Length: 311
Image (tube, rainbow, N blue to C red; front, side, top):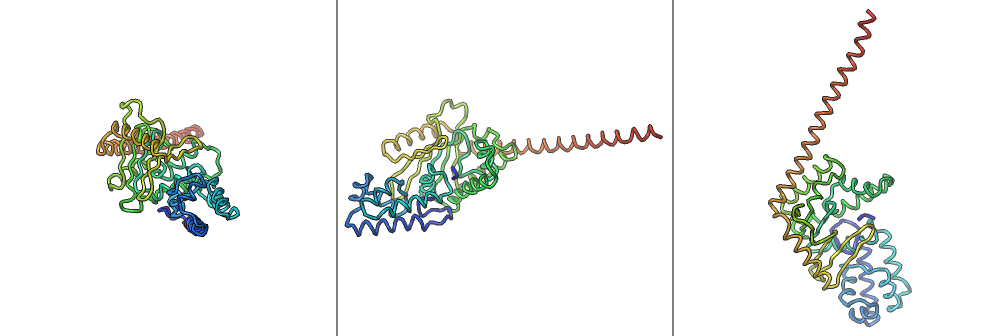
């Protein structure tokens, strides 16, 4: 969701803020003679989290940053820096950390029951999604949200990372978000990424019945950190890192994926739907042209008849 980044990412956003945060945290921790594990125990988090804060893989929540200030005697320095960096994020506060992790993940697996995942959205589709929830938003703010969403697609600039996979409920490709033209463009974009073997997308058919997952889910793995799961609801997000909960999310995702159509069948369905939307646009355009011609002929006849009567 638009509003950043948790560290050294692929988005092209300035990264010096969180990198500086991590560098200063490490310097102050070592000056205090504490190990990562010791500081973690004092601020009620694991030592590995402290290491991830220092390397920029993750960013701390404000309450943890404030506890760090207390333990290191840094007079609110880390709390203020955390608050300032989060305030300047292009994303909503509940999504900011997930966005940062998305930028450094080695693999991402998503389940989308309602909309095309944000990282795959075209500008027109994203605009329509935002207008659905905020129909009276000022144009300037709307455009900033769209820009932030498109920025996430930078993760596909790399040829291989992250490994990205998604399961889309069939309703996602059939729901007319923004109209036929927008849907044709959106599905063509997804099909293009699939054909280039940059992403994997499966469609969960409506005939599959009730899915094992009832909402959006993103599973992320990292080369040097434990996996996490992120789920989102209206104006709220939940980032899970407890191994038991993440494992349960992975189990449910496996059930959803096993019920979905194979890759090649999914690609064929997505492409056929894109073509169907495109034909609809062409047909409507032709009908509009014929209607305009008929209207012009009618107007000419109405103009000519009074003239003849006058003669």
